Amino acid sequence: QPQAPLVLVLHGLTGSSDSPYVKGLQQTLQARGWASVAVNWRGCSGEPNLLPRSYHSGASEDLAEIIGHLRAQRPLAPLYAVGYSLGGNVLLKYLGESGVASQLEAAVAVSVPFRLDHCADRIGQGFSKVYQAHFMREMLAYVQLKQRHFHAQGQHDRLAELDRLGQLSNLRTFWEFDGKVTAPLNGFRDVHDYYRRSSSHFFLGQNRTPTLIIQSSDDPFVSSHSLPTARELAPQTRFELHRRGGHV
Image (cartoon, rainbow, N blue to C red):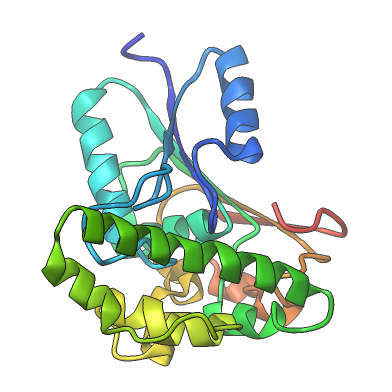
């Protein structure tokens, strides 16, 4: 139905349109008669993307392009968005950047890493290191898959761009990975520039779209001092902080 509400669903780091939280939301929406579209960020669909650049926590230009495409395809459908973790950060950054021109009726962001530098510190502490090790394996495999793809396709210029990153097998922390891989591949000066320009925290006040943010106090990735204060949120934003719930 061309007028059925349409919800754009954005997954988190190393997730995909197959992630259980994405599928679960889509099933719930379908039961309500709402349509949905699940995004795969660059290289997350099971096949590598075509360029050396990757997806990352600040890739709001990709989200803007997706929203523009959906508005053109379904001009009569009210459009909403739900973002989880990295997807929530990208969504809130986009909302702040676009202001009144977001083209979204409303938005929901869940388990958001508002300050990427704080979260990179937090995931390197205590039991959260287990999650950090998992993410490192997944993210390094993402780069290696792309290297094999470029080699098989004879795309030597693109392969050379990845090879210039140097030895990656010894990367253990988000600070190291984002400094050695994410920042140079995506046009940032260094890891500090990437974290500063991509953290949704710095865009919250410019959001003009009705937005619900859902966080948990026991999130193993997001430290309490990363959470925004009421003064930092736009008037149209509602912030829920739950005692329990973990990450996503």
